[in-house]
Image 1 (tube, rainbow, N blue to C red):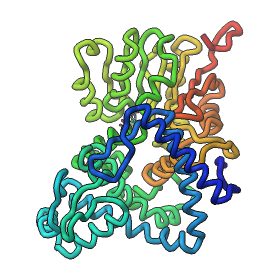
Image 2: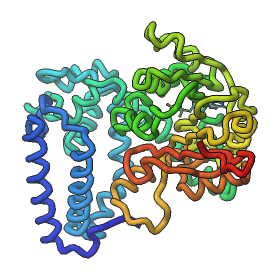
Image 3: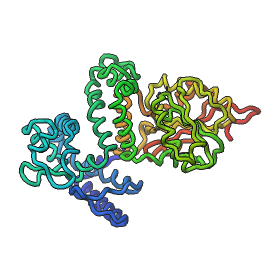
Length: 433
Ligand SMILES: C[S@@+](CC[C@H](N)C(=O)[O-])C[C@H]1O[C@@H](n2cnc3c(N)ncnc32)[C@H](O)[C@@H]1O
């Protein structure tokens, strides 16, 4: 359940919009940011938590006003054609309109069509459809230029990769959702999900077999960090300063999170583990000389018993959401020998998105952003994002002695941090430090 403006009159909504727009302008003035326009030279907006909170409030009001002003019939008239709007955008990405249209000046429809390798008629029709949605402009008939929204995809290859991969393989997988789930309505995992139905392999195997798309996926993930603004959630989500020793970063990929933490907390060392040797091999290249002795890389599967004993903490970041419940229980079980072999109270840190418990009153847009990612998991991995209660249940299923001691960032930020431990203390201790 999300907080709503459900019973607000359209006038109250409009007044709220006016008041929040004034606050937004004040924040922009205070940070010396020019007011946004559709011009290709419009300045980027701030990404501070205060500004984002205001954006979310305003967007919820704008959305409600738009819905109420439209009414259901007119709303569905526009909703049902989103598939065509998405097809237009997919074509613009596939035919590289965003990079072909020059950053300054304009390009004729004929030149754009020739460079894109597409006929002039459909090039013009696609561009004019996009323009109605506020991507690109047509300053003179038959000549196209960028606006602030289209140029954003030219300027940043990582953000463009995130958008393109979403409109390519992920959209194709989404289109198989009905067929995949109807074929097997009671099973959901990497082999029973729309991605598997579309491509015949689990998603990680797909990228192993298609290195050209694996490269775009890696860039897309870097783009997502910029768009979701979540890079600081791990560093701020736990009291790393209180730890001493080595943090094991399970499923750490190239180790980019360990690198960031090692820079922020120079007293700690990190042992990055990942199942994928190729991703792991990228890690040592990220290391500056001062980090070389503090970060190690080992190929290890988190489904196998954890071999690194006596760590200061075990971190698993953005991995549990890729796996179905039964697999997550296996991952948690594989931690038990290491936690038994470590000091009582050694933290097991699960750093993943946390969904609100049903019935919690929160911002609708905030919840929707989390449910978007939950749907990514459903479609691409047959897995899910979880509430704290769901994590607790899986931990207990793996071993009754798991206890959740703390939850950080539960109701703000993009990623939460569950601080669990294995209660194996002796002499009546409860296992905590
Ligand atoms: C979504 S990425 C998260 C990477 C990193 N922890 C982060 O937060 O950016 C999931 C990672 O899990 C790794 N992975 C998949 N299966 C694994 C396994 N069985 N054992 C260890 N790592 C695995 C993938 O190679 C990938 O690096």
